[in-house]
Structure formats: structure tokens, C-alpha cells
Image (cartoon, rainbow, N blue to C red; front, side, top):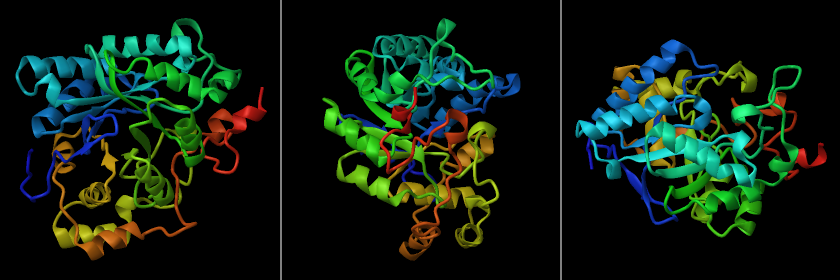
Length: 341
């Protein structure tokens, strides 16, 4: 285990319900949509720098469009002895055009080919809703340029899950979901043979999702934070952009000064300390290193960050409703896509 100069375990690990261990500090690779050539060109070096720094969890996805570059970085890291395959936890995500059960293995096989791997440590269903697949599994677009929803596949995410279960072993070590609320988690747990090991969701001091985190923890599901710093999402799904930013909150700035570290390190330290995984992303070498130099906050400071947003005050920055026409996070109606055709 790597111990950074501030004394907080960098490679803090947790045992998943699948029996495999996962590093709670991951390195995110999302570069935005659409991805620019300049951003794409930096991915390989960023992943390599993260591995040299000591990160042992790389998080990517088919839809990010950069699995090829991530795979190049992993291949080079293995060949140069920076890290061994068995030392790196690799997460990727099933794209929405592969939700039909017959297509799940095709999507996973494509990801493995791009990543240059025989297996991944964790496969997540990226979203509960599905897109209509077109040629080469690109989403079919509506007249407004937005993806066409596959309502049948969206309703049958349990069927998608069962196809993922069939891949556990040779191609996939653990399986999980992303962007699932409690209602959808309940339905999945009631109908699965293999329970989700992970639920990756938006999670930061302005949107701590206490109920979801507690609910998952009680059932042995590890919650991992994407956008752990509350970053600005792509325009198609962005919301509440006038609500301020966790990185600029007066409390975050106060604690950063107290601990002599950056605001980002305060937020990431809080995220790990509450028992959730985090996958910060950056292409800046210094920030990659700083995001791994975390501290253990004093109990009173941890509780102040935890209580930044009370019940009813939470601020979500990601909302897909405008993009797809229904709210995938609705806790009152299990799936509004079931009312659409």
C-alpha cells in the first residue's frame, strides 16, 4: 500500500460483494462530449502519469471514445514494468446501444479489444436507459439530433443485467451499475442472481446522496462518486449551473487553508473518508498528483463538509431529463419510460 506524505492511505481498498478488492481512489478518463483531438491526445500520457503516481484504479467507458488510448497506456505500463495487470483495477461501462441482451457481449468484446485486455475488473451498466442502435451500434438520432430512446430495452434493464451476469468469470470479474436510484436498485436486487457490486453516481458535498449511500451500504453495494468535485457536465445534461460550486464554497476554502492543501483535496478526502469511492479526472500532471495526496479530516471538519447541504437542499448538476424526455432519477415512479412508446 502506498502511503503519501500526508499520511493518508492512497491505495485504500475495499472488498466487493463479488469477492474482489477495489481501490477506492480511481483515475477518471472522461474528456467531454464531443471529444476533441487535443483531449484525445492527452489521455495516454495522463493515464501513464496516474499509474506512475500510484493510482491503481482506472475508470473509463465505451461512450467516452478513448478506450483505445487507455488501452495503449495500460499496455505500455505493463511492458515497462510500471505496474502488473493484476495490480490494476480497470472499470469500463456498457454503452446504451448494447442494452439488448443479445448485444451485451458484443459491447463488452469491443471494449476489451480497445483496452487490449482479456478481462476487466468491473463492468458497469452506464445508464438504466437504452438507445436504439444504428449501424455499427451508433445511436439512431431523432430530428433534433438527440439519441432515440429504446423504450423496450429501457424497461428491461433486468434483461440487460442478466446478460451481464453471464459474462462474469472469463471476461468480467465484477459487475455493477451507474446512475441508478433506489427504486431501480430495488427492482434489480429482487431479480438478479449476482447482485451489483458497485453503483457509480453523481456524488459531492453539494449532492451527498445520503439516503442512497446508506441504502446501498446496508445491502453490500459500494457507492463510487463520478464528478466527485461537482464538475460542470456536458451541456446536454447540465443543470443548476447557477448554484455555485463545491470547490468555491467558503467552507471548502476555509478548510483548505487550515490543512494547507487545495480545495479539491479537501473534497476528495471527505469523499474517501465517508467510505465512498472517488474517480477524479485531470490531464494536468500536478493535479493528478495532488488529487492523490489526501488527508484525514478531523471529525468536526468532516461533519461540517458532510452537512453542507441538508435534506431538500441538495444540488444535482447532472440531469438527463431534457436529453431523453423522462427523469431516470424519479423515486416515485419506477421508470417513466414505461409510459412511453
